[in-house]
Length: 464
Image 1 (tube, rainbow, N blue to C red):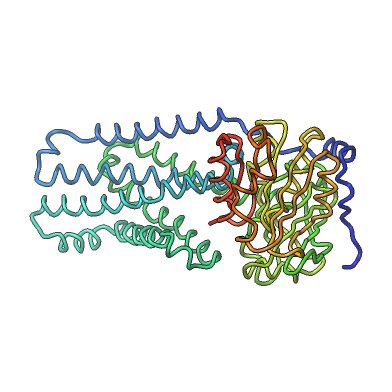
Image 2: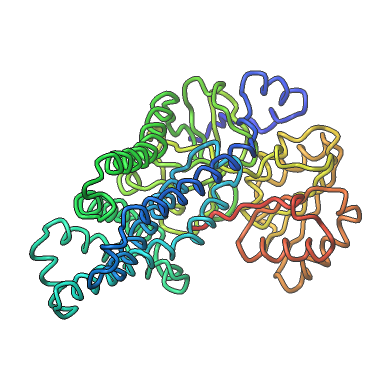
């Protein structure tokens, strides 16, 4: 694997334009799609509430346990709807992902997360109390009676238990103690939990019993949600991976603990990807085939080659340096909204911490000559200035400047001090940030304090 097959010198302005004529950029974001999706989701939520209210009669509400059962029914309907919305949010629908990026989608997913679980738990409690009041029995006795009499309820109870367990595991203090692989497997059980809940909702839900049209509509909603997940999380990645047929052709050491993997494939000139984006990479070899991890492309494609650069941090990233030539590679993506499409100003400043330079390095190739980029590369030691020569060449062709800041974090000063000293025209530039989450937060806060508009700050945290 000593022969270099990927030539960084291709990334000159003239050659980049020629390359771009064959390798299309990712489609630009269309904000109206997000507005439309939000409007549809809100209208559907209102429809769910109206449907639940209209299915009850004053006579039913006046019976023993009627009001309590009605509350249980409403919390169940809204909770289940929000759970389906939460699934759709992380289905990686390209038109939505290009607007918010994966980081933004995950933030929405986390914000929404406690609501469906809390509502569905409330549903179970209120329904049980309502039935207990109707039959004049105790709460615990009614639980045993419901589970024993209605088999679908047993499956739903298991499903609710799984949701609650996932919700508890989502608490930051607990999540941070988990390996990423454990978290990923645990979240797969959410799909099982929703599937277990489906039968009892359709068969026993007060809003569905005696309402065949409503039952059909909700069945279509469930099928559409499942179809969306299967299309964008399974079918599309499989089709894309099959089409491009990526294989590892070279593994190159860039710095201590940092490795570039160069893949070769078919028809890569048709792969629509922009600088700054990433793929979820699945290396089809023992121990790695079952999990996909997000890694940025560290250069635009040079058909038939595609390169990623990885720092050994966890088990997966450490194993990347040991990949063998010929290993098959499956990809999901490209993902990411931190591209030139997000730019508001002609000039930019790129702030990279450590391995974060890989994403910004590919972004540099997409920047026009007049962008005059200021690149700040921060690293704990000089040998961690990854791809520094490539970055310097790209910046030189775009009439910019590179600042290399090496040393302990405290000795380099605050992010605010760095920006004030190195970027005198900061307010006339867009700021792109990539690196460890703590560093990104510091730089964003510093930029906001200095008066940079929120719309001119671009970042993405590859968290889970």
